[in-house]
Amino acid sequence: MSKRIWILLYCLACSFYSTAQYYIRGEVRNEHGVLLEGVKLRLKSKPQQLFTSGNSGAFGISLAQLKDSLSLQLDGYEKLCILADSRQFQRLQLNTLPGTLKLYKNNRASIISNTGNDTYVPYSKQGESYSGLIENDFIEAATFPETGFSLNIDNAAYSNIRRFISNQMFVPEDAIRIEEMLNYFSFPLTENIPSQNKEAFSFSYKHTSCPWNQRNQLLFLQMEAPAIPLENVPPSNLVFLIDISGSMDKPNRLPLLQAAFKLLVNNLRDVDTITIATYGGGVGIVLPPTGGVHKQTIKNAIDSLSAGGDTPGAGAIQLAYQLAKDNFIPEGNNRVILATDGDFNVGQSSEKELEELIQRYQQTGIYLTCLGIGMGNYKDSKLESLSKKGNGNFAYIDQIREAEKILVKEFTKTMFAVADDAAITVRFNPSIVSNYRLIGFDNKKTALEDSNSVLEGGEIGSGHTITAIFEISPAKDSATSVHQSLASVELRYKKPGTNDLLKQSFTCEYQGTEIQQADSVYRFAAAVAMFGSVLRKSKYTKDYQLEDVLTLAKSGIQKDNVLQHEFGKLVEQAILLYNPSKKKRK
Image (cartoon, rainbow, N blue to C red):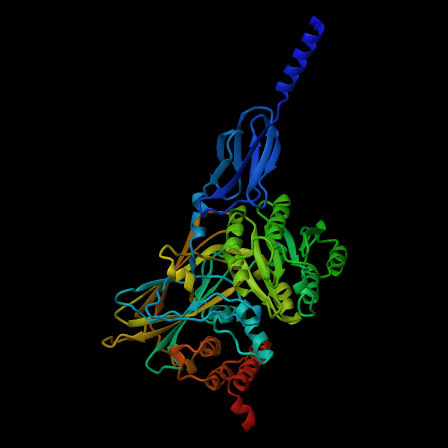
């Protein structure tokens, strides 16, 4: 063989070895063993190229050397850098950032413990699902004078209850969240305790007799968030994520959503941006980021939607958040609006898996609004979990008037947050209060079973009013009189976009007003709370009937308040549904 041929073979061999391909394979999990999709991976030898883990957390990257430095990054997790060896399968773990680690615990609505042995049977009829709730018990003030509860603007329970009763169906007990029923009406403050700071919350309270238990009393607490006029709301970056799967192909689902979103479009300003993504048989972008000035273009995109296919909810949520991040407005209103019946049936579909997914985005400054719709396979429990974990709110649309209420009349309340992580601590005076019971704000059974469960505050929208009611038993030996301290209240919250904890403190004095002598607002609020309590078959109102609820409600209904009159009719419908003998006599 000639010398020239030997040289040629040597060069070919060198060329082969210099371009030899190696392959780094592996998977990424978090500390809970959950496979992580969408992890960003970069090699030191290829700094300009970005790789990502797939939907099973797996990845595979080719390189020209045996080993290379590999960096991994995912929102909500600590960054990881390793020396990866292509001869070994990489089993990698990303650890949750300290700021988001608490999100993996079950979160409580209140820190009142359940001391009884309540049991519940989860509602499973017609394919609907609700989180199991355990009703708050009375607590001894001498032993536990202090309690707390999370604030939010969710009101889905009321319109869902209305849907059941209007369709002559019994309401599942776990679908009845009394705090959301009270939130629906956003009661005005009657005796406002003013604040010198216009950006602070206003506070009001009333101490009255208890209409269903003559031995007890009621303490009403009201908080009103500062209101920001629409023209002063920062520019909005809204991503509509609309379910167009086969389960949405009914008149009270996708068509109702289309009508609802077109109402919202009418509220858009020129500075606002809308993006529309859909999922159903696949995930796609129907409308790229479009300014609010192009209202007809946006409406045309909404009108073009049609239902069909399965429901890949997890992938759709990831796309929606990515779209929101791509168009993120610093100090703006960045929000994903998920509209669905909650029937995710492809990919990550369990509540736990979806919570894990949403938690990755919780620190991005992007809020999540969940709009539930439909009946028969409506997954209330999933949408409630998503909204809580997504630092957002939750509503249920059963009719076009409800869509108008949420998306038009209460647009800034629904879409613009003025407080994050909002919670209240109440400390009772044991010399006056023997026992107390928080009505509503009941905890999920899973949270009570978790010894690490924590109280996490909620999101409050512009101008929203929150009402909470305690039933209290007076101390037997107390010689009470007006102006004595009944309880102290502390509100804690963060201004959106900051980690600064703000606090406001208030004092509630003993009043002892007969509820019939108090403002009608309190009689109506008590009637709403009792409506939920009677429907839930609470042991604390077993001697109180729906007819008693109606009598109390009528004494508080304001003549020109349409929503309050509608409530009265709803109670009348419930009486005929739950007590059919009344219908026969009529």
